[in-house]
Length: 289
Image 1 (tube, helix red, strand yellow):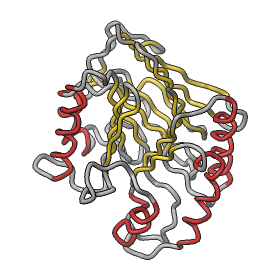
Image 2 (cartoon, one colour; image 1 turned 45 degrees about the horizontal axis):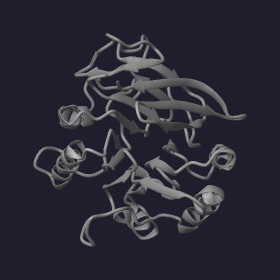
Image 3 (tube, rainbow, N blue to C red; image 1 turned 90 degrees about the vertical axis):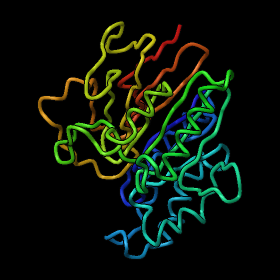
């Protein structure tokens, strides 16, 4: 199976249109199974999150992604830019997988072959004892106990690990509250956005890079997740890197593009496909014996 993934697209710059077109071209050449967007979709808000949105921007975004979203599954999660009017536009425009009619659309999960993907909202309470924490723990437990699931991917908008100079924290809020949980259930990949950049880590736990049996391209039987920021879908890139990079940060880029994930029986391959010509600038494998 293979899918495309990114966050932070929007419509008000040409790059979102260009990334959409590139996904469509790659999909035509060799089909994706779905597209997974990790928050900040259309950027339809008018400033502060409590102020209204311009609904035609949502329509424009739909037209922008129509070339691929009209013929394969489009799986968008929420970010901070979906917050106006209590996420109403997102909730009414998209229907994600749910176990019951009463389940919120704001966090969701699904299986595709041997892969389980669960998306959580970093814009709602996710700490221990919250509805979302309970959802995530039950979901990960069930996935890990399922003999047909070999790979588990957690998605969120805001990142667990990132080295953007302006927003850097030694321990991010998500890592503080959820890192033990994703480690407990042996999550393979944590996919995020929010920072308009690309960054991937070594296998890491509590800020400590675990490099044994791994190199820059191949992670062999990692015991902790790899974290990826792929907020390169089209919104303005104006990030600045922390220098020097933290020891857990392996690769960083400020190019536009998206992630391309290919999963076989014993490996997951992650590629960063970049504008303008679709050049793949970074490839890594997670290998399970």
